[in-house]
Amino acid sequence: MRTAYEFMVVGCGGIGSAAAYRLARAHGGEVLALERFALGHDAGASQDHSRIIRLSYHAPEYTALTPATYRAWGEVEAETGVQLVLKTGGLDVGEEAFGAIDAYAKAMSAAGIPFRRLTAAETMAEFPQWRLDERHVALYQEETGLVDARKGNQAHQLLARAHGAMILDRTPVTAIRPLGDGAGVEVETDAATFICRRLVVATDAWTNQVLAGAGVSWPLTTTQEQVTYWATPKIRDFAPDRFPTWIWHGPEAYYGFPVYGEVATKAGVDVGGDVVTPDTRTYEKNPRADAQLRGFLDAHIPGYVGPELYTKTCLYTMPPDRQFTVDTLPGHPQIVVAQGAAHAYKFAALLGEILCELATTGASSSPIDAFSATRPALTDPSFPPMFNI
Image (tube, rainbow, N blue to C red):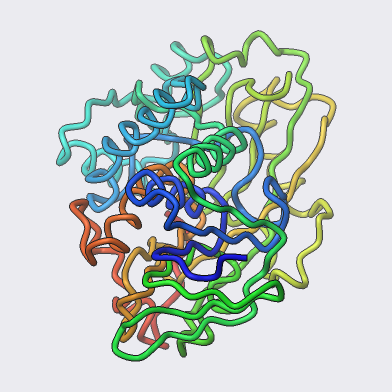
């Protein structure tokens, strides 16, 4: 078994698979990617049919990246011939007094992103599936849609191998050891001990476990979340040509999709689950979150819910500020880390490109200063958690 590579990637979820592809496209057979589970597993965060992709965001550090995200996914679609992004239009909805809608409008306006602001009455006239009142406002952005996570991961992995990368699944990393003076990294597994010049870590809920050998432990909170698919009897009303992807902003946040992947609607509560670890999580439905979601949908999108098709669980792993971390590791510039804060899949294709740049040159052409590994949220123990974005 070959054990020395220029570049290694640990983690082949959405971000890691994209990094493996971009590195292989630039460096061919000098790339090895390791995944602790079987490829396509459902133990982490990069799974299922759909993730929201959007230009709308709450802060300029994200709207600065969103256009390039569509470009990056388009490059993968062009190389594979497989459609990964479906534009449905999107609604950000909530009570005006909560302030989130204004924050989204301000960030999009500053970035020159077009959108329409709608009153409750205007929203229901255009999308009669909704039930709102005078407290509510909405923003409509036509480029919003969904990216197929299952196909996206498969496409990135296929292209990585096509460009010469080796991908080994069922190969958990048991330790990493940075070599002196930034010379490289030893990566230990049960199969072999590998050595590389530059290491990319994209292991989400397992980030601290993998980085322990570099003396790193970040304040990350992991929760078990879930989405539910319903076989609604109003299926035609929720087809992509009639109903957009949506996010509800408030003290409790919700999100959902038109019909895609299954002949069913899909929705979830954002940060509605219980705190777990990768070892203590279950795959069981949370009845509290389920009742909360059903109550919201019955009140605001009657007809969306029908007989339950199934509920799937996944993990959210978040730093206290719920911002991405995309940076070289302080003290160990040969190690590059990405942690997606439970809202990164839409950016995965672009983050793979950024990680390739960081691993190759130590810098990125994309604006990522806000996602530094030295920011207070990761270094100040008193930083207060604020997960609702």
